[in-house]
Image (tube, rainbow, N blue to C red):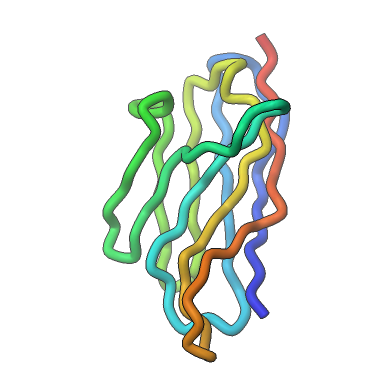
Length: 120
């Protein structure tokens, strides 16, 4: 069993900041990549940012310079610092992990999501 639990969403005014966290737990042998995706009503889920176990990061163009992804391998935790938030950043934010279990099965897992609301 593998679980990803997100926290840190909420309501913020435009220009404000939020920090999301995601903790992975369970029968995890290793984690290759963790990341954040978001989905607004009526839209497809899209990549926000990812980070590898080695620290390499990737960002969507729409969040570059405003969002920062970081991770703590020992804690199996990934963070998303979101600054200068815009109304268009409002969405459900979902944590994803590409990992291998102790049964040596590699697959992607998703968290339940945390809601970010940005008021204008």
